[in-house]
Image (tube, rainbow, N blue to C red; front, side, top):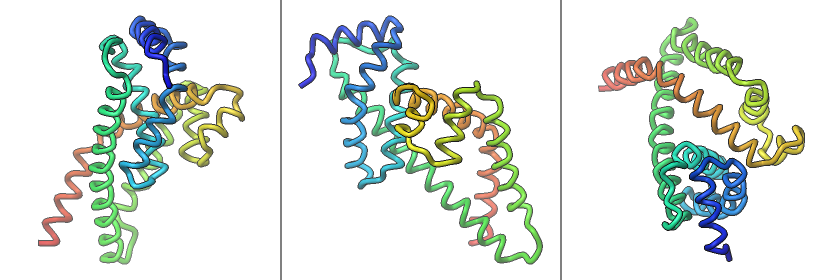
Length: 198
């Protein structure tokens, strides 16, 4: 049972900008939030980990709006559910986009522009990683390119899991913001796909 008085004190400190309070709250609630998302996502561990990370970075970003007198776990769950819904929507777009690329590859004998586009996007992600601070870049590569867990990365780098989660979430947030600059291109390809299928 989490002491409500201690929680309220941590929330007040978080609201004032205490990263130490943030890490304590992460330790207290990340496991509960992970289990909650695992139930909502039918046991999807990748989604659960991504949502937990992104939820807590969102908490840090809006820490000034946190209400110490309100239920923190309800606040966390509301953010997490919205993020999970966004992930499902994004996966649907990615699925249709991948289907488009597969169809294009089957229809053409030579290397397609879409394959070039896909390689370009991978190269673009790599170039974005180079813009990250050194520690954040290393965490991103270990997690997203080499598939290490947060716990393994924390042990390798001698830092806390919450620090790994925070840095990884910041890296992913940066990537997503930059990738949105190419969103119009993805939508154009999807539109062409649906027109050709009609």
